[in-house]
Length: 150
Ligand code: RB5
Image (tube, rainbow, N blue to C red):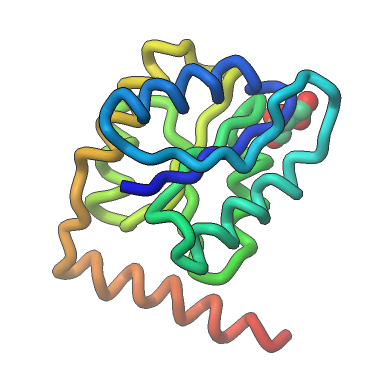
């Protein structure tokens, strides 16, 4: 798969390790994040990665900031993005199976690198279950449509 990765200054080291990890799994990884520890604004990175996913430039993406929260909130403002914060592997497979999440996010200040790798691998191996979940994901898209003209 072609996978985007984005991070702010709180997650430079973890981004590099996760990028290398995903490449080791055979994926092509596109880096949209920062590579230096100077303070930056996570909404810009979230929006950039959200647009890359929504436009199909990448198949899915991983976002990392201090908590995973701010950067995922920003990405979720882009139509078509379903970014989910995951701090454990159960959440990581369920957000794909039930919510068809196209971005996962986690916090470099919250999870350790081994947990982060497990989360990423679990998410990438999971598949959307469809069925009743398809209808609910469509309902989320409807909310976007209803609010995009406001
Ligand atoms: C940066 O200090 C921090 O606020 C950011 O990485 C993130 O945790 C925001 O949600």
